[in-house]
Length: 145
Image (cartoon, rainbow, N blue to C red):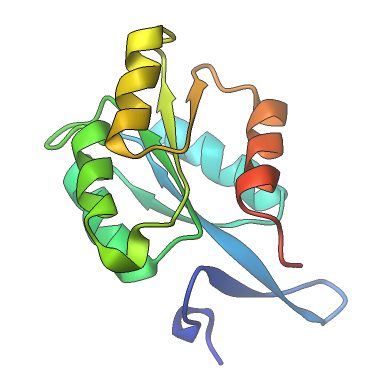
């Protein structure tokens, strides 16, 4: 069965030993290609499958289609900002419970409060401390390997 045919928020992964495992699917929403690439590589090296979106409108589309297990949502996005994209994702019944982590260079109480009010479950600041992010991912989305 191809990985694309799996339902829900896992992707099939064939490990080096030949055993099949299911990697939780994380969606990275980021408009800067270098940041997306870095996040993808770090997440894949930690055992996650990754899908990407470059703007808020694409984030809503990809979330509906792929049904990720967790979304890393940059707040400063073109076309539709991360807060508006989060609100739209939360309106989809099948996506209401998907953890969304706001990602922003702004580290003020107002930004945190706005993200939580929009429906984000947590907030991380750029530059991202990957150890902190990995701990957050384990808390919100335990690996199913």
